[in-house]
Amino acid sequence: MDKMRVEIDLSGHDVNCKNTVSDVICQQLLSLKDDFVERLARVSNQFCPKAVVDMDSFNVDSADIQQNQGTVQVGFGYQSFHDFEDVQTQQHIKENWRFELAQQKAVFELDLPELHPVHEI
Image 1 (cartoon, rainbow, N blue to C red):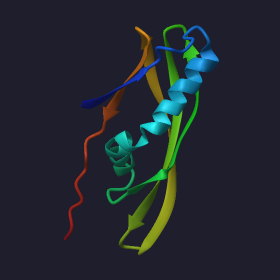
Image 2 (tube, rainbow, N blue to C red; image 1 turned 45 degrees about the horizontal axis):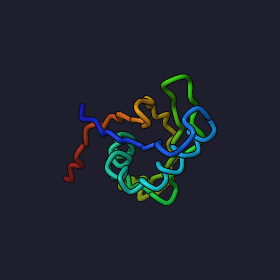
Image 3 (cartoon, rainbow, N blue to C red; image 1 turned 90 degrees about the vertical axis):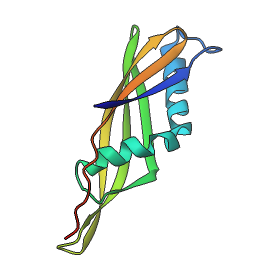
């Protein structure tokens, strides 16, 4: 499985303060949301092969930090389409993204699920 690596620079911030680190990580992830389009599309594709991600719905909750690692909860919505029913619905996904704290950085190694191509008949 392919991986997506994301590094958030924490230099210039008090890395001993969990609240500060959490705020910086959340703000940076939000500012990088366009970098996650492919990953979010692949995740939503696992539920609906014709899913369209709503990047405006991308949100990040506070990070939970324990020593040199942590998790942050990320959520996003997507539109799912069902041709056989001619129905469109809004779905929402929440994920926990793990990260490591090392050398003034928060480092994420996110899985990139395989794409499942849509086969039209």
